[in-house]
Length: 178
Image (tube, rainbow, N blue to C red; front, side):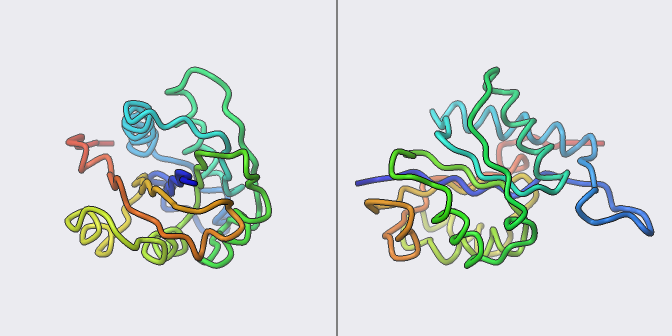
């Protein structure tokens, strides 16, 4: 059985100010534009997540809202505090806890370095150029799409996953200025 996993790093955020909680940082205009670009790209690839797992940080929820707006529809989302600055292993645990067998396309919106670490951990095959680019950097609002050969999400860490797409707004030919 094949499932599709989309890993998405939050879009570009404000630097933050002294005393501001890191969780409360908002997207800058460039980040908001990036969500539209990446959302359109996902939609053009016929990605329509059956479930989204999203960190509760403001920057990840704003990234998700931007992506969802592209679909012009409400899509199923579960927010989890456990995804805030989560490691690759912690992200896998959240996926195992929430994603049911009925979920065919799962989107995870989270943070670096965990999202990058998970992408590299799962990447067993795929386009060599994209794998090389992804290994170097997982930029803000980048998405990695994997075809995972697994019967269910609980054993994702043991699945054979193929990177089928890796894009950032810049790779999509969109230079974004604030």
